[in-house]
View (cartoon, rainbow, N blue to C red):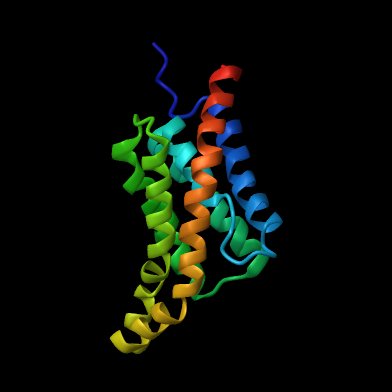
Amino acid sequence: MTPKRRFTTQEIVELSLLAVLMFLGKEAMSFIPNVHPVTVIILYTVIRFGYKALLPVICFVLLEITIYGFGIWTVMYFYSWPLLVFVAMPFRKETNWLGWALLAGIFGLSFGALCSIPYIFLGGFKAAVTYWISGIPFDLIHGISGFIITLIVLPLLCKLRDKIG
């Protein structure tokens, strides 16, 4: 009797490609602040692979660190993006695309609040609130674009995957 593998070869390939797609998608759209396909790719990965979606998320963060170096933002990325996986998991079997788009939009709107958490420890509560408030315009862009991109792209990704098999 052979032990069950945690990841099949196909899963490793697909999860690796999804990590690269997150990274390249974000880089390709970097000329538009906070507009990128990372959220929708993470949501697709949760639908397709469940908690295994954490692997490409961590790889995405590590790729970002490789290019941009280590900073306070890396701490934020290490808990914010994986949090999306955990929040999305209970809805994994849902096919209501509007619900997924709302989740992406809410996540984008709350991203600044999530990223302000380290500032509580670095500069106190006022520093965290100041950081959060100063980023609200970017959170609005992140939330609205995440909603729109998810509403359009997530059903297409799922249909494409179903066609491929």
